[in-house]
Length: 189
Length: 270
Image (cartoon, rainbow over the protein chains, first blue to last red):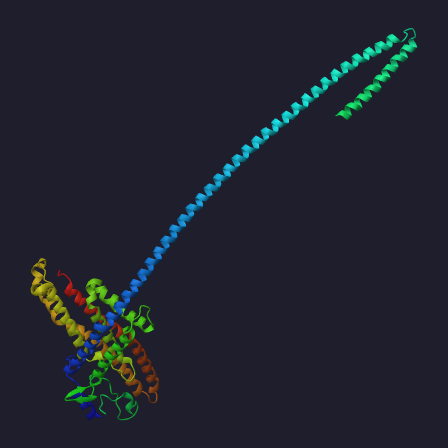
C-alpha cells in the first residue's frame, strides 16, 4: 500500500500548471479541426440559410403590407362609393318628397277648382231653373189670371155662391195642374 | 492496472476494515497512463477525450447545419439556438455586429469545443473534464493571446499597439510610468495566464470534488458508515448537477473574455 502511494507520487508532475507538450499539440489540433470545419463549411451554410429565411420573412411581410394597403384602398373606394350612393339616395328621396308635395298641392288646387266649378255650375243650374220656373210661373200666372178672368167674366156675378164655387173650382184645377206640373217637373229631372 | 487509472470501486477497502486507509484524490488523479504509444508518443485519456470533443462538436453541427433548410428541423433549431447564443449573446454584444461578424466562427468553435471538453466530467465512463489538464486551456488561451496581439499591432501599428496595450495617456502626468508598467504586466504577462488558469482551476477543482465524494461514498460503505456513505453519495449527485452548470458558465466566461480581448485590441486607445 505504502509502496503504491509512493509510485503514484513519483508520477505526479511537480507543477500542474506546466502544460505537457503532447497534450498541448493534441488540444490545438482538436480545436483547429473544429474551427476549420465550422468556419469553412457549416457556419457559412447556416448563415446562407438564415439570410434566406430573413429575406423570405421580410418578403412575406412586404407582400402582406402591400396586400393590406391594397385592401385598405379598396375599402376606402367602397366607402366613398357607399357614401355617394347614400347621398344620391337621400337626394332622390328629397326630390321625390318635393315632387310628391307639389303633386299633392296641384291635385288639391285642382280639386278645389273642380269643386268650385261644380258649385258654380250648380248655382248656375239652380239660377237657370229658378229663372225658368219664374218664367213659366209668370206665364202660367198670366194664363191663369186670364183664364180666371175669362171664367169670371163668363159666369154671372150675381150669385155669390156660384161665384164662390167657381173660385173654388178654379183653385182646385190650379192645384191639380200644379200637381201635374210637379210630377212632370220631377219626371223631367 | 496502476493506481491512477484504478476505479474507486475496484478496491475492497472500506471504513472499519483494519489496515485500510482512505485514498484521497489528488494530483495523481489527473495523470493517466498512456492508452497506447506510437513511436514514443503516449496517447492518453485526456487526448482521446479532446479528439472525441472534436468529433462530437463537428458531428452535431454537421447534423444540424450540413443540410440546413429555411424551415428548420429539430436539430437545426437547437443548433441555431446555440449558434445564436454565441453570436448575439457574446460576439455582437462585445464587438458589435459589423466588427464582430469576422470573429463569430472562431468564438462559436471555441465555446462549443470548451463546453464539450468540460462536459466529459459528468459523462459516465469518460468522467474526466479535459480542461482540467492545463495544456488544453493553455493552448486555447495562447490562440486568443496571439489573436489579440496580432489585431492590436495590425490596427494601431507598432508604437500605437504598445500604447494601446499599456494604456499610454499623456494626460496622466507623473503616474504614467506606473500605469504603463502595471498595464504591461497585467495585459501582456498575467492576462493569458489567468485566462487559461481560470478555466483550468474551475474544472480541476470541480473534478476533485466529484472524485472526493465518489470515493468517499464507496469507502464509507461499511457498518455505521453506510449512513455517511448515503450523505456522500447525495453530495456526489449535487456536485454533478452543479458541475453541469459550472461547465457551461466557464465555457461562457472563457469566450466572453476572448471577445473582450479582441474588442480591446480593436478599440481606439484612450
